[in-house]
Length: 590
Ligand code: PEP
Ligand code: MG
Image (cartoon, rainbow, N blue to C red; front, side):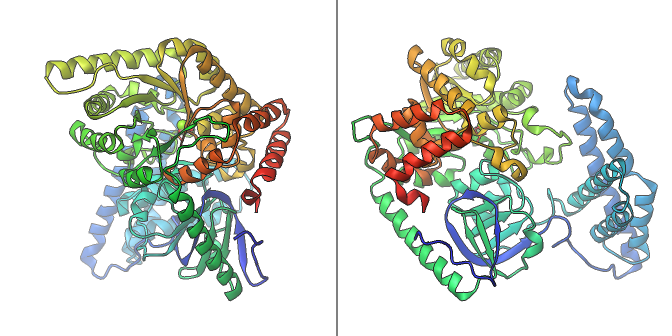
């Protein structure tokens, strides 16, 4: 299993970010948002020409409505940016664009999608040769408007996804978390993308579904043709295109060995995670989709440490109602009982968007109306969710977790709202559980430095290392260009985690860690050494992390963490930590 990969000169090998482990081998299905798989036909009769123009106009009015809605929804502090949307609205009615598109329909009898594409191509052929920043930014505006019209024409966020024969590997520029969830159920074997990073939400969904994935692969789509055999190695980040027979055989053997190793560790997954010197570490599962429930149970989880509820809101036209939410939450709570479920309230925003806002012009989604900010601004949506959670809590142990908190006010405002919902359920005589513990995600750096004060008003903390790293190091977690700057073992990150764990211990506040650092064999030992007593991770990671805990002594992990804490650079901290790990677990490095 651990031999070096036998790439041979005939193989084409690209490298990206390790997004979800596992090996997948299969035929590629290539999807290029910009020009593949859009309908392409000629309009046969005169009578169809005007209705095609109508279809184009309707698509434009959909885009116009979306742009106007986005403009309206701009928060007061961003109203000054409305000009950007106005410019797009003007482009939508640009006479040159319209004239060219309509003439392609009328004179060349092209369908509307192709008419828009050909217009965009001719405009970019002219503008691309002009070395002027202003002109090239106008070109991207034109493209944005053009592709929005195409999306509206095909009635989808970015064009229809291709048919996905079972066992194929999707090769794509970019894909939303919700689309991955949809395709995985159709038998997808692996995913390779040009965009995204290890903790992007698309990667998180791939991990949840145990779908091997490599993301952030440059020049991927151009280098693969539909039907090419592709090998994905989610552990090394390699994508091997058109491998020769020797490479294929090597990976087939390695894939079988991985499967049998995983089956073996799953067999011992029900054993408690107790270190050699008798310290119990709680290991729980992260849940995104109810499909993961059986895995969470069979992989020996001690509860659900993070239920990411936003996925139920994505990929659909209408928001879920209280009864629908309640039914799903109740199922999760009852399946997990007697273990607890930490339900995180909606964390929409950033790369998790409602379908209607998938074309949001907000250039800075990660710093925008995300998580608790969105909920407190959209109270009817928040109230519906809180009522559903309170009702589900009648059937098992539930705690409520708030995402993206940056100050105590958000916690207080939510507490008032929860009280209001308790009273409404009481009046309506609907069964619910009162006084649920209300916890705060520690993922915005401000909360690290407010942890002592927050501890006075909150029941527990959950450290979200994915965002804590993103916001502390100012590195977009989904941007492959800065993937190597996304450093979990950065000294500032280690010190912040230690600070929160210490405050938790001193104040008697329960602290769990639910970001990806808890799921990685390279970082979980350091977290435990820093004092973490509870970790939550994708179900597939539970057996391997429990095994690692059972093979370690707490005192040695404390010593490793102590060394890492003294490091001045990431290189120093990860060098020390990797040396220690390599000595004890050499198999992790082969
Ligand atoms: C985190 O930020 O670490 C986290 C667990 O939340 P999410 O990945 O959903 O943003
Ligand atoms: Mg987060």
